[in-house]
Length: 181
Image (cartoon, rainbow, N blue to C red; front, side, top):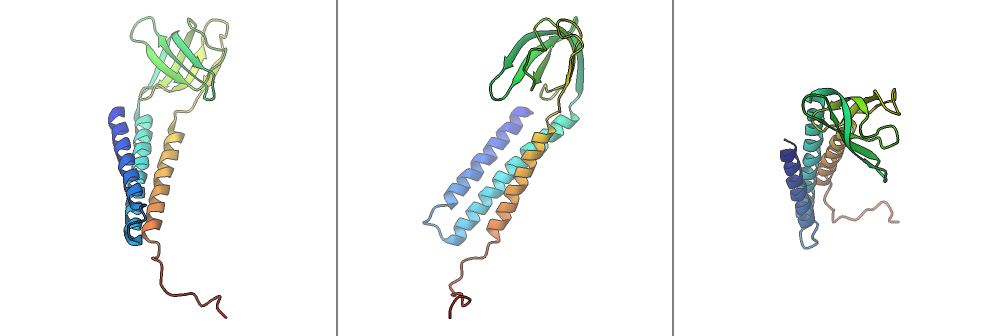
């Protein structure tokens, strides 16, 4: 499902950009330029709206998994955007992939933990360290719906911009008499 959503988003964004670039050429009449720009912005807005709404829906309807096991294959990024990716391997059953926005010294490979994650995107909701040097330490993170709401808002802004562009008054040939003596 993620691949389909990504491909639709990419195709809509490219189509919107192509229309906006095509419409911005000076050789076109102002009315045609406005129509192409408006259509390109509408398609770009639809892309953001579709992607954000779909992501929001998938996050909210995805099952929450709870797993107790040991951390394995821990990779931490300490750059501008800190994060940790690892697996929690229970005694029986498949390992659970986990993505966290935390990167620090409280989690290590081999520690026993309890995690709660979103199945759709493997986002960490809660982690509690059960053994090791950080026993008793806990962290909670959000499910990621806030970023989906930002994408929906961007789509709506593109839609408003598209409407504004399509309803802008054409330039008139009359001169203003307000500033003339």
